[in-house]
Image (cartoon, rainbow, N blue to C red; front, top):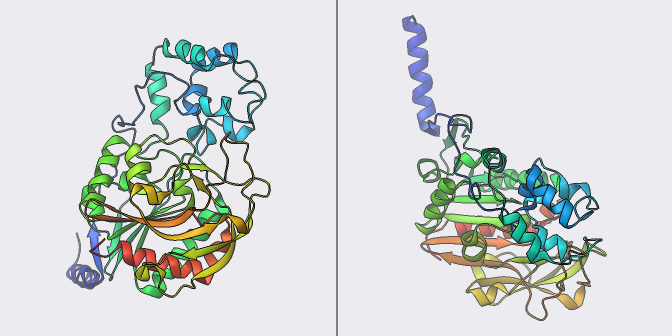
Length: 380
């Protein structure tokens, strides 16, 4: 039993803590406690599934080896890794077969697809597909602050450690400078209504791959559409294959197509768009940076986005990329930063941010401050 002095100390500590923190008490629920409703758990095998789900199935990978011998074996290991993060989570066999990565072309992709479709999706297949998702939520507290930011960093696709860590360090330092509250997690289980309601902005730090269960997707979508804020950088909109249309088409507003490969990183000129004073505050009208420059299937302008900045393709060489048969260049209109209204919510996306040093650039840090402050606002 506690003595009176100890009890008094605990009451005092609790009183002081209540002045500084809003406590979110959660009981961790893990994948071992219940089955996860992962999005593709029962999807028929096909050349349009994430390639990792083909490789995880002996039956499916056997069909591929028989119909397209050498196709998988000749790929770089980063594509055939069956533990995440892996490029196999963000590429499909159809994409591989049509790219320069395929050293031996598939004569009939439709025939391969038909044979894959005849396979039974077993219980083992379902478990393997769901293993990369989680419903874990550690206990944490949310300090009081003028703006509450959740930094989300779960990746099942591509994870470039230096850029992820540099971005996280930048957000930590900006949060300290701007007096934001910051909570960090790499668990998809954080996407719950009772947790998300405590945050003004969810910042997706180079998130790659399909990372949320159906329940988590619904919670995050509702959070945004009912007034939440989203900021995504670089890899958060850079997956070749995506499996959540709302995220890529509504929240981001453009589907990734390609980026230069030779050289991958180039200096280019960025220009602010007229009519974006809030997002452009403190930034020059034009500036040059070196980074990996994404191109997209369509200009975000054509999907109803408010373009904040464009990149001038005349100032660098878009070239080609072996990941895709499509050209890298987008032409005269190449948005690189934009915002969107999603229901009552606000979405900001910047395709800038592969190189770690980008997050030390004073102009980009200013842009990120503007983005978080805008996303955490009340109007769009």
